[in-house]
Length: 303
Image (cartoon, rainbow, N blue to C red; front, side):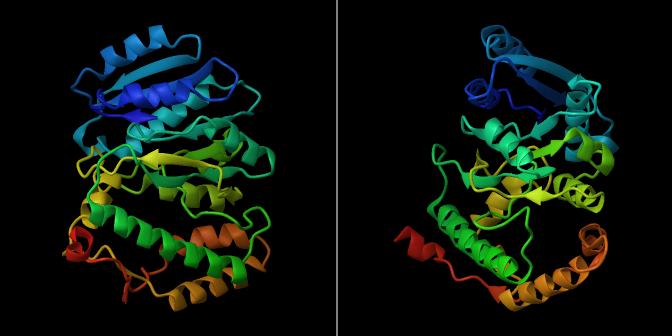
């Protein structure tokens, strides 16, 4: 995982990884980037105390301003992890964020999904109940979860995929991704993008033939904090949810999602259709966000 100035949060993440129901020791790469706090010292201490459960590989890098972003950081972390795998081209890479908290079965559930035939596995994002969050944020998060569940239902009805059958979620972000080493290489690694590097990687992997799966038993807790390190990341999304004047609940209508599912189904019927979808979809114009999701207003939540 990449990490930047996360000295306070790294102990919880490392403890979660040390508690995995996976044969010890689990190799973990932490790529510190442009860090100015005590993250290295914290990790060195954790490494000595957790050596029976984890083998921590700690890397430090200072990227120039034009590359000091999430894409560079995650790519470095993933590339370093790839180097640790055996030279036979096998193995599985998993990535998460420094402020996430995976449950004890996170690694094993991801590997099980790979064993069932997936090349790429997205994990669901669950708002961490252990961290304080405004009531408005939690209410809107729940409303969005219901919205995306309906989108998944539409997709599963009109354009089912045999390797990603319901019940499933729809998240595939850097908070929880697993990918085979072969699929990672075929995708060309994580794109050097300042934001959205995770989604761009997922599309590139699918364009290269990777089969993406979203099993319900793969999930991580994510922080509801509103101040984060990555521009345009999860913290920014939390801030929008907590702002009653934001457009966070303006979304594409379900009819637009039906049209998109039918478009995908038509392409998927062609030879190489899955890769074609992954190649063409990022070039489509953004869907109009003209549907306002029904969720409690700030005054209703406060009451």
